[in-house]
Every structure is written in C-alpha cells, then in structure tokens.
Amino acid sequence: MKSTIVTFPGTNREHDMAAAVEQASGKKPNFVWYNDTNFPKTDLIIVPGGFSYGDYLRCGAMAAKSPAMNSVLEYASKGVPILGVCNGFQILTEVGLLPGALIRNKNLKFICRNVIIKVEVDDTIFTSRYSKGQILSIPVAHNDGNYFANAGLLKELHDNNQIAFRYADQSGKVDMSANPNGSCENIAGILNTKKNILGLMPHPENATDCNLGGTDGRPLFRSLVDAIT
View 1 (tube, rainbow, N blue to C red):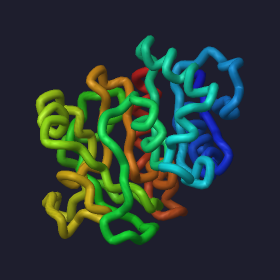
View 2 (view 1 turned 90 degrees about the vertical axis):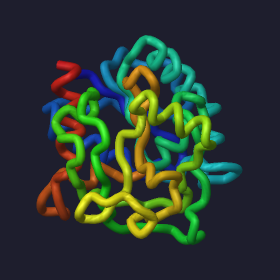
View 3 (view 1 turned 60 degrees about the vertical axis):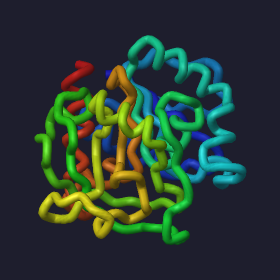
C-alpha cells in the first residue's frame, strides 16, 4: 500500500500518523510538502493535524490554497481514499471535499484530552473493523472543532449515512453533556457522499499503542489496509 501524508507549515502530527500507518500496513508513507507539485502515485492520502499557517485567517483556509491540494483534489475525483484528521478535517472542508465548517469551540477554550466517540457506520473503508454503536476512547486537541452544518445539510448527512462518528458518553448516549466543543448533533467525523473521504476531529493515530493510552484508533488504519491491499 502506497500512502502519502501532506504537510504544511505548522503541521505537527505527521510523524504520529506515519507511525500508525506503518504499524497497520508495514510500509512507511511518503511525505509531500505543501508546495510540491510532483505528487507521487498513491493509494491513500492523509492530511494530518496541527496548526497549518498558525491557524491564521481561518483554520485550514490558507492550506486549502496550496499547490499540493490541487493534486489531492485530482486524486479525490478518482476515488482515492483521503483521511483528514483535526486540522486535516478543517482543510478538507475549506477545499470543498467535505461539507460544513469547523468553527471555534463553544466554550472558547482549547481542548486536549481523551473523549468518547460512538461509531455510526461500519460499512465503509475506514470503519469496517469497527461495529456500529461501538464506543471508542480517542484523544482530541483542538480550538476550532465545533462542526457546523445548517438544517438542510444535516438532513443530507443523515439521508446519505455520512455521519461516521459522534461524541457520546460511556454508555453510548449522544447528548450535549458528552459534547466537548458544541458540534451540531455531537458530530465528530463525517464522510463524503462517495464514502472515500473521511474527516474527523479526534486523533486515531494517537490511539494505536497500549503504552500510550489505548488502541481504539488502530482498527481505522487496519480497515484502510484491508480495503486497499
């Protein structure tokens, strides 16, 4: 499996992501710098977390205009799987590959802790090793993770089964008491209509080693390996 991680000035989770991919696939990903137009042939593209361009203007807005993202758009149109985590999720919404927007956390504070999320779909290339309704503990680290969508878009997300993960409590109950950032309907991650693109705010790459707090993120990467290889 050939995978590519796109990085920008301010990216800081690329090596965590590379370690998670190598653990699952046995192969090291390629790294592509934001202004690199010589994009390698790849089976999977990952836009990792961090603070691209210092989160100035809007989170991900400047990164979305980078040369490398033109190649990401081209690969996306061909159905290549794309994963965006945290700032990567923000970038994918800014470039138009995923609908909605990520805005400032409701409490106006940076959040850095483990959260509970509930698996909403298990029939995608990203979630096939999970079970629908499964409860996961995954870290978050964001200031602008409040997912916003208007009523019309929320209906589309429901109709097309595009909601991948929601914030929940340990029992799986989805309500505002389990919502860390104010996201509409506790949404933690969404898919595009073709289900080849996933964006989520929690960091599955930081939940792949029991020595570092847990392995609930590992099945996401193994699901991708199953689908691609």
